Amino acid sequence: MSYVPVFIKFDDKKVLIIGGGTIAYRKLKYLLEFTNNITIISNECISEVRELIQNKCLSYIQRNYNFSDAKGFDIVLAAVDNIKLQESIYVETRDYKCLYSCVDIQEYCDFIFPAHIKKGDLTIAISTSGSSPAMSKQLKLWLENIIPNSVENFLKQMREYRNTMPKGKDRMKFLDKKAKEYISNFKEEK
Ligand SMILES: C[C@@]1(CC(=O)O)c2cc3[nH]c(cc4nc(cc5[nH]c(cc(n2)[C@H]1CCC(=O)O)[C@@](C)(CC(=O)O)[C@@H]5CCC(=O)O)C(CC(=O)O)=C4CCC(=O)O)c(CCC(=O)O)c3CC(=O)O
Ligand SMILES: NC(=O)C1=CN([C@@H]2O[C@H](COP(=O)(O)OP(=O)(O)OC[C@H]3O[C@@H](n4cnc5c(N)ncnc54)[C@H](O)[C@@H]3O)[C@@H](O)[C@H]2O)C=CC1
Image (cartoon, rainbow, N blue to C red):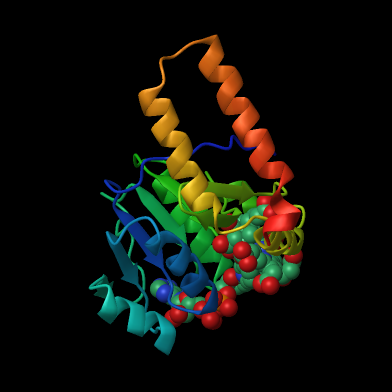
């Protein structure tokens, strides 16, 4: 299966998570980095999820999922321990304008979650197309260690150059050299 890595504007999206267990919690933390517009439907939630619902003022519907609950949401994630339900919500959402993902059956995912690193304006997303989530996680940990936190300031500086220097070949060369130099200093900076 092939996936297109794109960065989607997210702050205007309505997100629904079905389920409130360990995996829902992991995906919830991820999504909260980008939006608070999240609704959770779950008969039960682990305490970590309940805490986030309270602290981030998320909508919580405490019951089992009902047919058509997903209508009106842009992003729907079924993080339940029930494969039949993951399948039936997939079928249902084919009639809606939304992107659907579930945690057990990759063929039913319009998108999958990458492991990711975020340092200031730098985002690195890692996927193995589902071959090995463990590998995505370990590669993320490795990269996280290599890339210094100073990248946040470096990117601010680079944005400033791009905003102030006139476009053209000279600027391109200059920016490329700056990026190359910065990366070559990684080991010394850590
Ligand atoms: C297809 C995908 C769909 C999706 O969930 O979006 C999917 C599916 C499944 N994962 C399973 C297992 C594990 N998942 C993790 C971890 C992560 N899984 C994530 C993403 C994805 N997982 C998508 C593909 C990503 C890619 O392309 O690489 C990460 C990267 C992002 C995130 O979850 O936010 C996050 C790391 C977060 C981080 O640390 O950064 C670990 C490791 C651990 O938990 O320590 C294990 C155990 C080891 C192993 O199996 O590798 C199972 C079997 C369940 C079972 O065995 O019962 C399925 C279902 C199946 O494949 O059948
Ligand atoms: N994609 C991934 O990254 C991974 C996926 N998994 C899969 O994720 C699934 C969930 O795992 P956990 O979160 O550990 O399970 P869990 O048992 O902790 O959580 C399941 C949640 O779903 C809720 N739920 C169950 N039926 C429901 C319904 N009809 N309506 C609304 N909510 C309902 C429960 O109340 C509970 O909060 C498992 O099937 C597992 O195989 C496991 C590891 C990684």
